[in-house]
Picture 1 (cartoon, protein in one colour):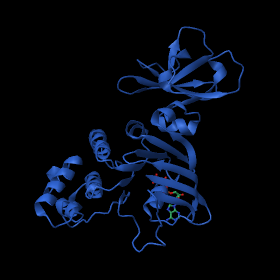
Picture 2 (tube, rainbow, N blue to C red; picture 1 turned 135 degrees about the vertical axis):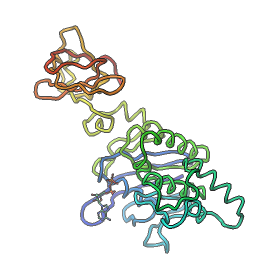
Picture 3 (cartoon, rainbow, N blue to C red; picture 1 turned 180 degrees about the vertical axis):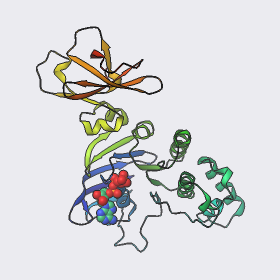
Picture 4 (spheres, rainbow, N blue to C red; picture 1 turned 45 degrees about the vertical axis):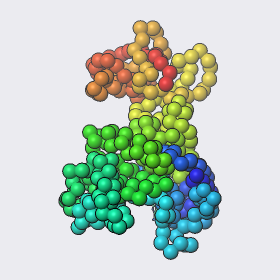
Length: 317
Ligand SMILES: Nc1ncnc2c1ncn2[C@@H]1O[C@H](COP(=O)(O)OP(=O)(O)OP(=O)(O)O)[C@@H](O)[C@H]1O
């Protein structure tokens, strides 16, 4: 089990991470979700042992991980990090790259393992291609396969699918995350992609300015979104006074997602003027004005600019 307790971490005067703690059991997947610059990569680098943690501690099972000031070679052998600038050798083939991480003693066994890894990242067709001739997304897939070569106990992935097109991404995510579960490999991913975090993780740690904003299962996170920052990860969201929808006289504001709002025949208080309709495939996202606020809601059809309509909450999250 991995146990992380970061009281505080800074590169210089400015505190980058503060009061972060979590544990990760074998095979569990934690997503770190946060905006650019909030400290996701720093957190992964601390866990991997590239950065020294003065105020806090990181344990794997009962062993305290000591970090770069106490170890000769930074990084832990049971853990692999796939960083944003992936560490692969450009002038060798894909097979040679993967082979460099295997024993080299049993040729046939290594060849089988390389085929298995290439199948997981769907790179069989590029076996003999020089890495320098691959696209960014293909290099990212080789880096992933390389990290898996020796079956680590913990895999740290920094934006692992950032260069991979949507067409391939979904299938690849399903394959890789089920491979990790089947092999009981724990995983921490740093991501901006809420779809990935919701679909594949056991826990999500949402960060804001280096501190814990929300922590819990994907269902818990989605149902407990209460601020614009938190909702921002899940598409357009509206922060509205609760008393628009209830008779209660409270000053509380609630987050309402576009799919929760529906045009109503009743005289509701939420009377909006349509600004623009965006085609989203199976629905339209309507941008509208309500007093000085922009309100987004979903509709089956596009609406003309200037159309006035009243909205109600059609469903809870
Ligand atoms: N080596 C460094 N020295 C000083 N400051 C750094 C260093 N690396 C990162 N930072 C700063 O620490 C903060 C967190 O950076 P980090 O890379 O961890 O963010 P991130 O959430 O991973 O961002 P992104 O999603 O853009 O990759 C940023 O303000 C960044 O400028």
